[in-house]
Image 1 (tube, rainbow, N blue to C red):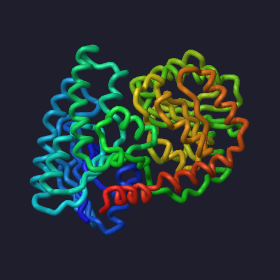
Image 2: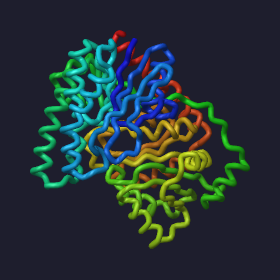
Image 3: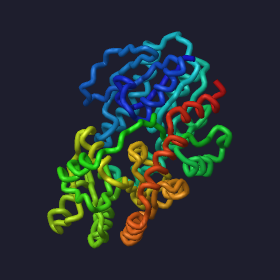
Image 4: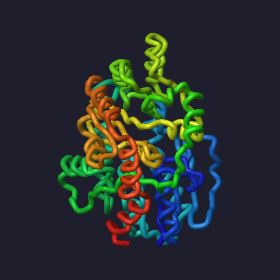
Length: 403
């Protein structure tokens, strides 16, 4: 079977370990050939040379800056890149037979690309829905105020509905996502929408020895006699860092330690808290190389997830997969629309609370401190292997598309 894959992710191989690389490895391992369209945004230094490997090829057309850029530039890039992607497919794929078009979204603006490929190659289209746009834009600030936001969202909504219509199957991150999509898109055939969780290939990771764990903790000022909670990733509007600060303040009297490593537009709020209050139970790091972060994470006890309370669409952050791969249970502090809290509580590999009250977060931390962490650690890795393995995701796609 020949598979065409499209994502905005900047891919130069599938050797890494992430959502898309691990899924594509499953296709290659099952003797399918994968052609990958991975655009280069204008700011990137990545080469536009074609990449040929056993079982897959990567093509890198130039497009404008879409992520982490201004409102106007983003809009222009979105309007032009669809034609650029179609031109790339015409040039690189040509008359080759395509059986499956696998599309990772956002952005929903790939609707015209999907419609073109489906018609030109008479193939099945499988949508990997990793965020729900434009609904998730409504509680974010945009240039031009509410009038402009409403107009932009209306245009995006047209593209979104077109994309869902031309797709044969839509894989959602959770049951909450499925219910949201069906409730807000009643025209859709319910049979085409289903759960296909974020997934990776699980690793057999050796636990740190007591000595290495101690050395790592000492390096970053993490007491060895305290339960250590770690968060690694973006620190921006989506996480509502001001609320994270209030949670840290509420927990100053508990016998635990918090490690936060990341970057983002609201990182400075954590710096201000550290500099003003000088908390003894916080290690704050402005980002780390992956290898160093992984070692630090492995020396901790519980992984944390934060989502702003005002989010209007259900979301399942992919960072939980890394926690689970390293056998860390999860403390989830999220909005009411996400079903992450329900998932981790039902799977007994974590604890959940809503992100609108620091005292409920403190109560959640107390529950962690009273728990048998070894049992939760085993359950976390077990849940990953049984529910979020890339092999499972691959099998769902094959089953749903009947290929």
